[in-house]
Image (cartoon, rainbow, N blue to C red):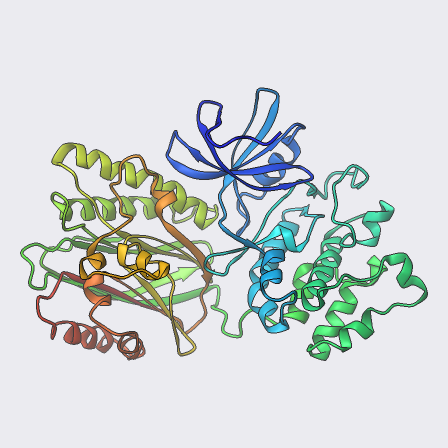
Length: 516
């Protein structure tokens, strides 16, 4: 029976809308009133304890809907998870005219390969790979969902007779109830890819025994010979002849993720500067890694960060919201919290996005407590966190984060302003809308982790990252930022600030440049 909007569960979660239904239950968007953040809740008449156990085991695997809670309430079973917003790969295919090109698949699926490969390394197989169980987020990152059929390889009973399944996508060993493993997910993934490319499934294993039309199907597609051979191998009826790992298939079908991998130990050159501009007070603040820097009227630091695969490193900027009380104290409090956060988590083995979510819950509460003492105050906050060759960023407000990679400048963050909302909605924008923030730290009855835009990705050798406040970003064009970021050494920051200082009524301005 579908839960109605407004239903309260466990005196904590309020149902907002139905997201989807499946063989293992229905999933809803809800609000967690205890910490005021949006969540996804899966509800079922039968036990979800096995799925909850699987999700807990995958807590450090990226790009899945991580579990927050599991409980039984009024004879129903509930799993509370991170809310992933976007559209399924199945819906994306329909909106794309029924098929997806090989080039588009190569753009969308590599992150999902990393997720599947890490799942398998944790000893978990999904067993329900399908277009409907991949979600494309707003920033085009692929998430894997629905772990109701997943199981541990340590379990001896890998039988499939009680498992809801997508007919036509199962591996032959799932149908025969033979031994299953990562190779079973490889098969279902390859069927999914063929379906996306052609809009059609493949014949059943029984029909393929006498004559296998799959190789002929693949030759009619715009695929390289290597990609065709990878799919033929992945779709082999004999599990012994199939890829034994997602990584092996991915390397053949997609190619290596990067030819510019960072080594296990490497250096990052940083240069950070803040300047008061024409204002009375500098409400900006920043920090670089474990070095906390109070802004004051003028501050500049530079040097190198030595990195290795076991350590987290972080830079951050905060810009006090000018309309609030003593905004410079809010930005300082946020940066101090970031400093304590990285000190306590530099060797944390957890997943970066989970760590940041927990931190944002705490720092928003800290700013709210500050508001109770000095009057309503608020600040933006943008964080760039990395470990080895992967990054995770979070931003609340309008201090942007850019990445320059292979000559291409990309805005990684998302602007939380009234102007941006109106532009996205096709509405007329007024000048004051650019100065009206829709999200900031210090909001009452809101969770920082829910307000923040969080994104993950990979870093390559040669990448350059710019994180700055709007006093910099709104007076320089993207081409100008790109040109200055490419300049070697300390001259990049000098050129950037010389250009910013030409503008009248100069705002507080803060910038950090990282060169990997």
